[in-house]
Image (cartoon, rainbow, N blue to C red):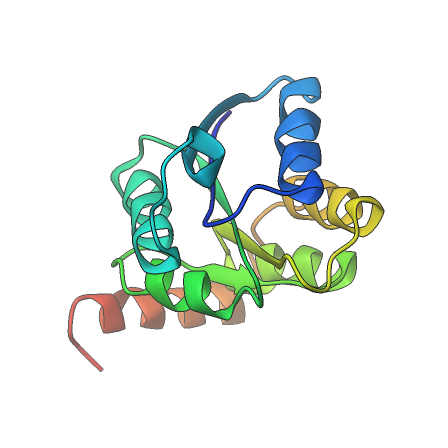
Length: 148
């Protein structure tokens, strides 16, 4: 899989997640501080969101201090379902119930060990195919298109 990873700050956690992804055999593209630029969190979130929405990346992973800013920015891109996850079960459920395609973690709260657990749960969980979940994800698509 192609995975795009972005952050407005490079930390031990971001380095660990990039290394984990490569060890799992994924092709990793980085943006923001991870690519040596000084992009602000809003641009980093939008860049990752655009890569996922366009199909250039299968999934995205984002970081900022709380995780909230990049989540908001990525979710402004139609087709993106970015989920801020603080634990593996939330990541698993974000994929299953919400068909999340961008994983977001807080630099402030997430240890390297927990970050790896969150990443593994997110990537290892398929989209749920329950009719209820499909209806809700379809409703999100209509909101992306400006509908209700």
